[in-house]
Image 1: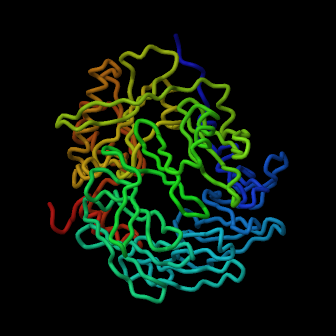
Image 2: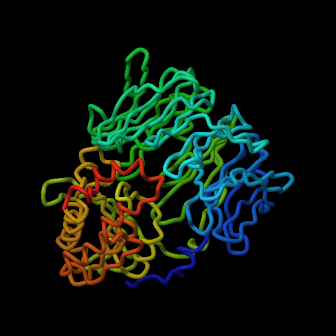
Length: 524
């Protein structure tokens, strides 16, 4: 037995051949990202056709975020300058191949709030144009480029929510104690009213999803009175709260809303793998048909205005992402592409979900990616720590895990306390535990792997980016006997500096950071 041939890093980490497909709202065209002279741009062609042409010509950092205009005649995309994260919004007329910058403001960050099929000429955006610390809400006319401010941020609003009439009628505001308030108003001319409050322990497992069609109720993720985030329907005027989907141990993840009725149709839970709960029986057969298209976990990324076609993506552990156009009438799918077809000639590594118990009794979940072609015994192991830390690793194709497995390393990814998706008790167990029990979980993961005979105790490394980079530095500093190597990628090395140098538009999250990381003014 021996390892398979090396996979070139360019195949694993370079630009995908194609990625991120989206159907035009009328279903006639398909767009995707692909390299043009080595830079990712938007390409366009007829759905089911073979002739695709670039409609953008970025020559710098490439385009990563784009979407269709609801008129099916424009492509909209976000781009910053040199990585400054001040995102600007551009529109491309697909027929004329002309491009306009819709938000030509210096040092201003644009966020997309809503672009609704029933209002194809408007998009609601948030911009910090008036004050770098806060994002106000604007209604942007795509025809004229005029932006009208429709909601002023008092300084603590972190999210705006539109109703089905594209009116900004909801907001989430941060509080000094690290909690959030849900604010509602009857019209854009009326004052805001605090409708409910989430304390700090519920803040990261709760929030609005959307208004209902009549604008009188909302769908929320809500962990009040429960351990994990439930999908609920809140009717403020009636004082009613109805639970639609829940799991005692896992938060509701993705939610799919019908584009016309605005009813919830699907909700997912990220357990060891993604699992879906069907809430609308009218699409149950469609979900079964999508599931049968391919092995792997699926997401419905897009759907036409007529809702006759869905754009479906699949992730697997031993294959790159693949995409299909699903035809609802015939309950069949047409294959589009995989993102990295060059990988098809290579042997990829299998990823296995695992679970174990921490030293203080918490159940921890994670994944081991096994190097192919060699015995699974006393392997060199890389502990690959996810960033965030309010994030989690999931099952599926992971280029870093494949790179390590292909080179002969077992890759261990663990969702340590403070990771999302496992309910608020698990999430909040990581509060103020950077370098503390969060790191103990990582140490326990390595010792579990050694005890199971997976890892050679003399050949263990710790590796990660962002929070994972911080964890790597902690590993090298506090448990140097456990790790032979530590790799920190953009990891903060000083938590005081980290908190003191957050961008101005993070200021509304400062109280949350004090709650979850620590307050350098009051804590040693």
